[in-house]
Length: 166
Image (tube, rainbow, N blue to C red):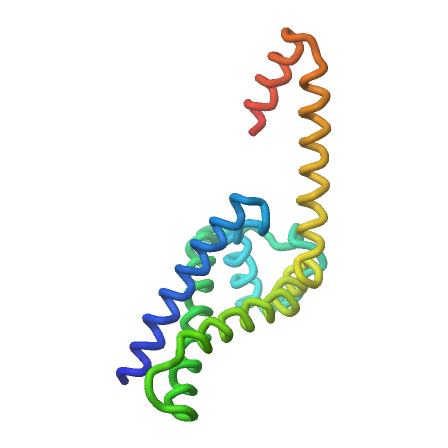
């Protein structure tokens, strides 16, 4: 029983660390931020028997999708950690190695790039999402260059319109 509790705690803490690192890397532009709402929509789709989407826009918004997303996200984290802790104790014995735990965490994250992301319609390794992100960034760069070239009064009007839409 102690090993199961250890696995649950490790799963919650591991998922929390992953979320914090994702937030840090998302701020630098290296990764896109985890969309918990999308995870919630995907989980609701699973409960309705839908396991594959051609594009993320096919996932219908649902009430409480953020709640479903967080519950699913952390349940998956716990569901991956408990077998690791139990398996380590059964096969190796003693406390689990942090180095192997990190390797296991990286392996499960990489696996999601090839299984979870494609099932959500994001393509292998989330290529679709990254391509759309780059296109959006290029459009924003173009807008900034255009914005800087405008006379001050026109630029202020555009800035106000953009602020209202964001």
